Image 1: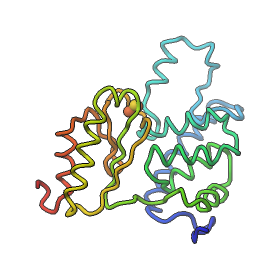
Image 2: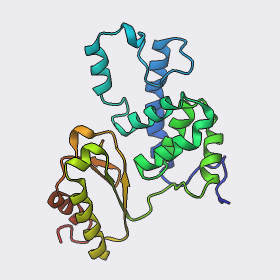
Image 3: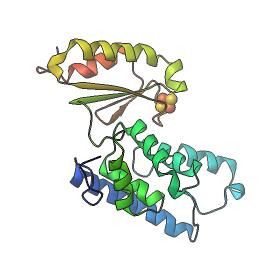
Length: 221
Ligand code: FES
């Protein structure tokens, strides 16, 4: 069983996470207030019923960046919406969050608690109970390679091979965690890799290697 307690929350980035969560949640609450009583609706639901909105407005809303500035949260929203924001979808939503973000940061747990209308202690409790979930990057550096359809057809496999090869032959960078995701919400930038939490798009194998060279001790090896 996990040694972490539900009340204590997961380790890592508590202040930064809390700050970001406050910002994101404040925006969500503002959206909810504007939308009035809309129990069970999306955290980013607009005011008017979808059917009454012009197609262009719906399309613009769909393409608009997430209020947090990180479109990976849109995938999290979609996962919660798919499960109709049901409290018993918590584990599935946590799986999505870890797949998209690489690990569960405190701000993610708060975001999910808000979205599913659950006490944060419940979300922390479930997340810490299962060993599958992790609360900090698995290596000194992380690469989450998107292997979703858009990224795959634009060469994600080649980028993945380059990243894996670099990670294998450059132990001086420390441990590099290489993971894959099905989509990280930035399909327009395909192929995409999330390096240490930063979404980087339009990658080639060469650009990925250049990026990782910055992790070597002299920064250019
Ligand atoms: S398929 Fe890669 S970001 Fe969506």
